[in-house]
Image 1 (cartoon, helix red, strand yellow):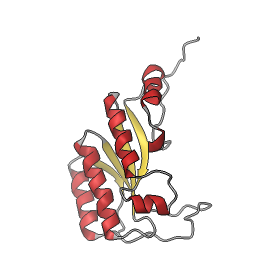
Image 2: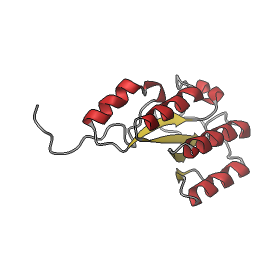
Image 3: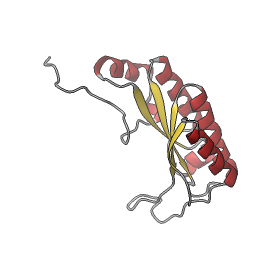
Length: 155
């Protein structure tokens, strides 16, 4: 097998991996053939109800399991979470915030995003849900502490 001139990086932003596709066997391949220090995971929400409403095909538990597997293999899980998804209430946002806290407490990283409807997607004609004031404030504190990055502000 010929050597590659450049290292391979798999599952790096913006090409995230679905949490329900993370497994020990997939991480073994990444360890063997890739130069990753982290793996981007598209978690999207900490609310299983919201994940179901946007047809993600996974729940919060799969996100947590994926993070644990990635950490077991010596990589850092970098989880993308979206705030303000259509139909999201303050309690759903708090669940996503709780998931973000769990991820960073375990050694992972979080990229927070504000929902933005994209043309050509099933959610193209929807509007972002308003962000709860306390959720937005907590995201800011996590960012100031260096535990979270991204753009989530509704302002």
